[in-house]
Image 1 (cartoon, rainbow, N blue to C red):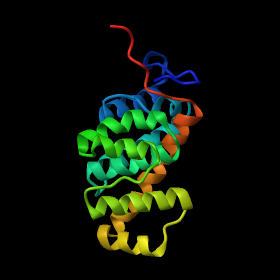
Image 2 (spheres, helix red, strand yellow):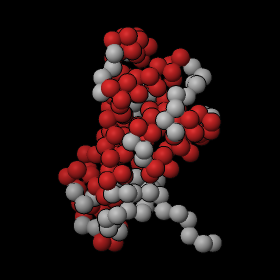
Image 3 (cartoon, rainbow, N blue to C red):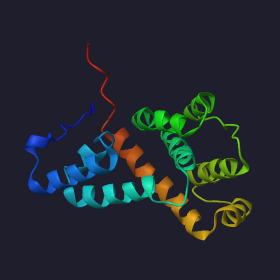
Image 4 (cartoon, rainbow, N blue to C red):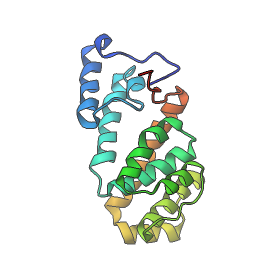
Length: 179
């Protein structure tokens, strides 16, 4: 990752940082994202990476649903780093490239199912208005159930933290070097 702060390298980490780093690698396969910045504060990094693993892999939402929410957050915060990481995942999960491009530019995407449309509306309301109106809330609770609705809000909140971290430290996926 490129960053405006120095990011710890694996061989310079203390045991606590290294344990968190290894956990990130085990669950995600790489440390792209905010994790290296968070490792400057292991007390933040540990719980944050655990919450992130839950939000990404263990909610009641499908991968395409979670990635839609993440891309709504990335667009809201104009977060290039989050977009670089999650756009390919979203496309692989089934969001069309045109939809991903619309979301990146802050537009309202035409989505394939009413459930995805509802998730987009809920995310945009919560991010833009900092509230969910009664009609959207009731529709979401009916369609998703209370547990999944709580998890949707958790995903939006967690990835807002990710976006703020990536933006604050100008973190981006490093461009590939010359071959």
